[in-house]
Length: 318
Image 1: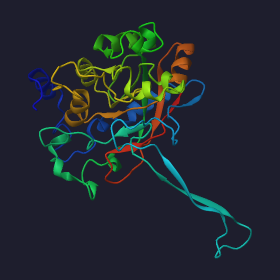
Image 2: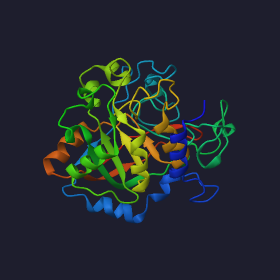
Image 3: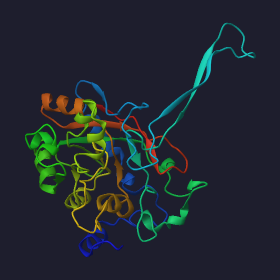
Image 4: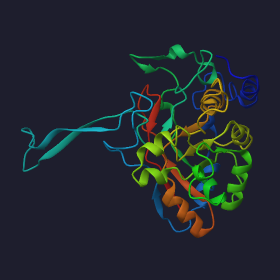
């Protein structure tokens, strides 16, 4: 099924193919610069550090939708064992974790989604195989992120705890991002990343994993296609959200021809750094208390060679 005409037109308008060369595998990661890092460090006032990672655990975020996404399974492989070759009284325990790379807080690699047979920058989908994963655009190509992060608390700007109080599938608009930026007293600059809060993570903290992951009647708030141009115009390096699906769900078209269009255009066409399941609750309160949504964001995706997503434990420094 082809993209709807207006979305295909938007895809062409925001495409970064060839912008950083025909062999580029960084995408908008190229916008991370010494200047954006200095801008981030200048945002630090008292050095408070806030983790934005959800705990990785057996009863974590994943609830089986979509299938074959698994929460971490922890197996102890050696328990208080002594190495016969090690002198002294040393004892140690090792363990093994089996999990989906996007089980918790993560960043999507640019090999994560495709359409019309191509990934970002014209890389054919044949570059990803079941045996070896992604031979190009894998998670090992994701750059370390040390830049200015902008908390855009859309829920707070709308006067609600969570956007699903307005509508279960509330679709965030460019105007919503402008209002949240005004509330945060920030002006986006090239190389910044945005942290978009819907308030959806509150349901996960309350123990309602189902509502967090699949929403109410399979509807949940998120970014709409109307935010894609906004992100492109500001030359942002990335956008990270506190939801499972990233974008508003379900799609707006009856035939679902726009399903996951935000994913497709941002990753496949723009090469945007993008991620889900970021826990922004503590950060939101801290930013509200100090009257600014400007932070230093530090996030290094795990360099899993060939993977199409990478776990990450981001930290905001205020």
